[in-house]
Structures are given as structure tokens and as C-alpha cells.
Length: 336
Figure: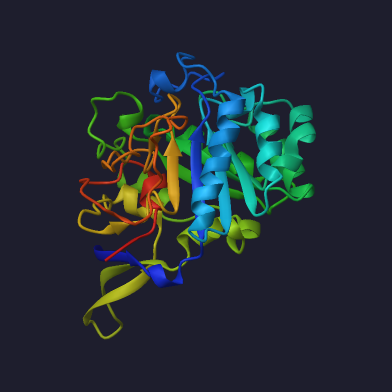
């Protein structure tokens, strides 16, 4: 099938802002496919007091635009290593309609999760085959579901260790509780070197690519809740053939993983809601429209979050970038 057009119904969009925030670049893993600057401890963790001021400023701006829900996705490095992580989460949770989702390798001991689960709306686990303790991850996910915290595991798939990755998925599926999600995730050479072409996926064969074409186990509990609102009503038109053999443009639900593995990431000349429904803060404190998006936007793109000159966007952005680099950016609503 060939994708001809994708789009989004802006008029149906719920007022959700997703903030992706890389709190630092310290990590207890050293994955072979990870850019060193994402885990080499070369930047300090964020300052808690400065961050609280930024959070208040963000709420003031987006609240004035009618934003109703705020989803905070904290990454790294490994965000759970930040010594003030609980303080940061507790401050955010004092505000109504704020939802925290750490993106974590899940390696913290079980007691840490028991002490901190109340801060989280959901947890997204990045499963790295070179380091993961699958038994521990299953134990943590089962516990989180038991206490009402939604969870999903994104399993990084290395083509040269495909059988190992499939076994990890099978081990995860053997969990006692079946209400947390499992999704295979493709690897990208852009994560290894800043000179790689962002279109350069790892060399997956057709059999391996099939693993990305469906959710292995859906994250049922989250699908109807706030986190799902960002992708609601996103769709794509696909060149297909009906039962009578006639060529048609069929409407399909938008699947960002399918789009990335099939090279459907060119959104030039679309209006993009990056900056309105999603912003990204890097480990060096600089603010961008998306995790990989570097479209220039006045006194916003590349400024530090504590810079008094920083001005949040008020309108959708006209995309001039050849393609979205990562799945997080692909998921941002776009339309014409």
C-alpha cells in the first residue's frame, strides 16, 4: 500500500499540551545504539527552583490559550536518577489536570517504585536488550497495574539480535497481569551519530519490519484516557483496492510506528501543532518545537527555558523540515 496523504481534524482536537523534558544526560546504561551525549553525564541535572518557575510560566501562557490538560513526559538519560525527581513531580501534581509519564529503563529497585508510583499517571518503559532484566520489568509492570498506574514497554529491536528481542517480548507477554502494553520499536542511526541521515533506519528485512506493524499487546487502560487524546482523529489516506478490484483512497487510523518504518515522515507545507500541543526541552535546557524538530520560530527555538526572552508559540507552525526525525514528532497533529 502507498500512503498518499495524512492529516488531522484540528477542529476536533482536545486541548492537550504534551511537554517532553530531558532532565539530564546521566544514565546507568550504555547502549551501543545510543548517542553518547544522551548518557555520558556531560550536562548537569536541571535546577529545581528554575524548573518550577518555568512550569508556572508555561501554565500561565497555555492556560490563557484555553489549554485544559498537560502531559509531562520526563526522559533522559535515566530520569529516575534525578535526586529531585519526586519533588518535581509532586509540585506538578498539585496543579489540576496534570499527568506525569516518566520514560525509563525501569531499572530502579522495586522499593523505589513502591515509594514513587503515586506521582505517575502512566510509565513508559524503554526495554534495551543489552541490559534489561526482563523478570524485574515484569514484576514492576504487574505492580504498577495493580496500584492503578498504566504502563507500556517499548522494546528496542536490534536486527542482528532479532531472536533475542523476540524472546524478550515473549517473556514480557508471560506476565501475570495482561493489562499493560507491549510495542516493538525500530532503531535509528541518528541515535548513534549526529552526522547520520535521519532517514537511515537500521537494516531491517521484511520479516523484521512486520513486528512494527501492530501493537503486540495494547495499552488498553490508557487508550480512552488523556494520553490518547493527542492521536485521536489522526488518519491517513492509503492507495488501496476494494473488493471489486477498484483502486480507491482508503482512510486508515494513523500509526506512527508504521509511518516511520515505511518512510512516511515528510510533512513539508503542512500546518503543524508543534509548539501548541507539544514542546520539547533538551538536556542543555534549550526549548524546541519537537525532539528532533529544529524549525526556527522567533524567540523560542533554541532558547533556554529560564531565558526571560523566551516566548511560547501562539499559532501552528508551517513545516519546512524535510521529515520528522523521531516517532514523538511524527505523532504531533498536522493538517492542511
